[in-house]
Length: 458
Image (cartoon, rainbow, N blue to C red; front, side, top):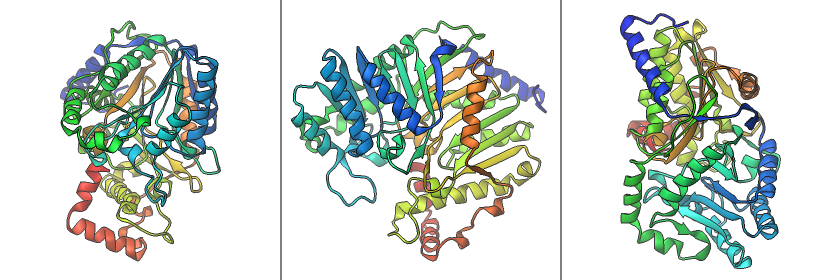
């Protein structure tokens, strides 16, 4: 039942429904759609899929790290390539991210150094590791595509490939995990990678050195790639009706991308409820306005966000503190201000905000669920950076007959398991409650309005 909507709002609602109805969709078998519920399950499934591959493996990730988790993936790829030499194996990572060490690390050995050593040690394996520069600087945009395409399967997750995302040791970073078997979807995603990324002049095989020199000489080609990526999307013909389980793959760069337009229409199409997950509470203005509009129309909204301790930039107060360490606090202040404006909707139970925290583990869950009909599976952080700067993709699942109802509910309940309900904005810390040096730094940042820039690019 549609709540409180006036005549003009109903007309707009119809426009959003029409947009979603007209999206091309491909048929998805329910028995070929599986949700996993932990990073260990996902690691096991990924390694198993690699071991059984026969035709191609294409792993797309922001980064593949030189640690136990990353080495497990490389070892699995080398093993399957030895058993079945005909398999085509490609890994795509962000070029800029591969050139630096992890923030806070003291080592100088980068992931590119590791990739080069792998190729030197196994020169005849024909495993290609490509670096894709989405902009001339990492701060201005990265390769944020998701999807591990193995034969006719897609293992889709926001997770990258390292110890924490794969839960190799004690600490983990929690995400969403889907295994989707669909030959058409696999072909659609692979064709985009081949056509738009691997054929680009700036794409570089990182295992063969001279990476930095090539990057410095590629600025014009990077701009050309970025301009092209703003215009293109996945190419495919839909074959599903509006009354069957189906998936619409989406990809895009820039605020006018097909993905951003779909997120906008998806949220406004809600009849009863929206559930939204993001690691960082730093939503773009257009999304905030959409949520407020829905609240005014009587629609229920649930937001599940990471506590500052679950943020990957969080630094315990006894450790050295840098500018980037302010991010978890800025995001918490964003949430506090948002709830302060909308406290009346929290009081009447229409707006429910949950914060995820479990030990010192991380939270990296993203996605949107609308009513019992739609869900967006994505690595998109739903922040200004993802809207404007990064190359993002997603899978929009349409489930009008509720065939995935139990799996979907279990996934949401697992996400909620380590959350606390925020009943009042004052339960969140104010800047005056933070350690002195953090409060002082935040005050200086705010005084020169640098916090606005940080919120836009991080």
